[in-house]
Amino acid sequence: MNIILSRTNLDETIQLLEIQKKAFADDLKKYQDHESSPVNETIERLRLKIESFFYYTIWFNDEIIGGVDIRDLGEGKYRLNRIFISPEFQGEGIGTRIMQQIEDEFPQAVQWSLDTPHLNAENHHFYEKLGYKKVGEHEITEKLRLIDYVKTIN
Image 1 (cartoon, rainbow, N blue to C red):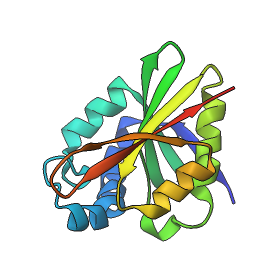
Image 2: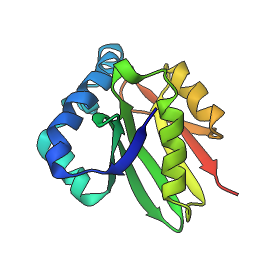
Image 3: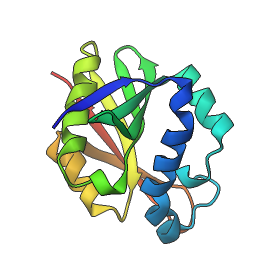
Image 4: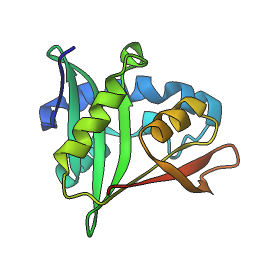
């Protein structure tokens, strides 16, 4: 399995947005968070993120299958703002490999943080398996709460 994580080029924006919409479509139906859903992100906003933050494209056998948005919070702290993989590639162990590559890409990191929807037990298990600890939660809408996770690197 040839999985590559590389910095995103602007010419990959359209493909990434299409994959992002597919990857988050079920969450939009479940939570109806039309204002905050990645499904409704504009191409302009995604381009701005690619230019402003650590944005990576996930490749599998020369095909774009997802993306990663990372924020530098300073002092060795980073936020995994978003990670998404095309639904047809989920459940194959790709996410675990990408998370390891992300940590390898940022050896100076002392802490990682992220959040994920409260009803997404698969995500909770995934992040906890990788060493993330639940530290709180916050409400986005009446139907959507996000669980906050942190991983401290020793």
